[in-house]
Length: 271
Image (cartoon, rainbow, N blue to C red; front, side):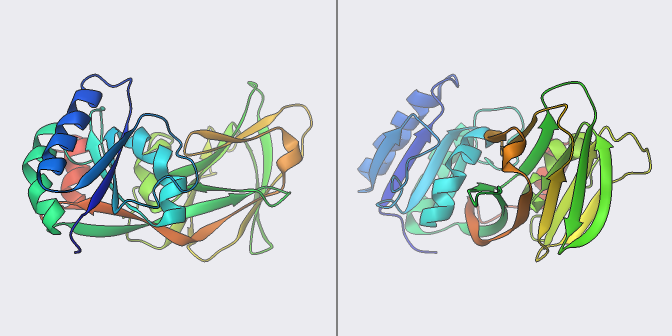
């Protein structure tokens, strides 16, 4: 991999020790002749990563998700330092990032490509998602959602909502709702109903190149659409939604000995 000359440090200031750790990383980077700059607000603004080789997030997986739109636009690789609970995406610890920083700067790291989803509303507005697109009602009433795949009718769901997960997001809300774990290298989109009224309604795995359409046909509730936890649409005016695999990908930086299987075993306490 190429050597690193500049680092954008995106910090979650609400995480204890995040800012001191960022400052320590800056000191080490500067001593190695690498330019660095700290940002404490995200989502990032367009162009904010254009002058940097990599984006180092300090917080947790949520901090990584906050930089996804700009990282996808600029194609800047993400290095995640975990100060949160799980850390499926942010796999470096505060201790390991300091010890590995010199080798990372030299270019001794792995790049893993992750697919993302593009969610489009009826007006053509697009919001990217590395984890998932979640459609839920803001009331306790069941929703009726019609799903089509490449204009072929799939099903009408009576449920609390639907989760459309990229492979990376299969271990997030999708897993909590009973959906399958999908390897991040798989080419797929997973759809999982949330508390479906019909118990036989289970997860559906679509090919990555499908175009999914979601229609909402009930005016008695106001659906909300979130992409990676960010509010994208509030109400029915944005429907029908279109969900497809984006032409862009996200690049994650890992240690040379990284194993996704080991990460899953550890984070899900299988060992």
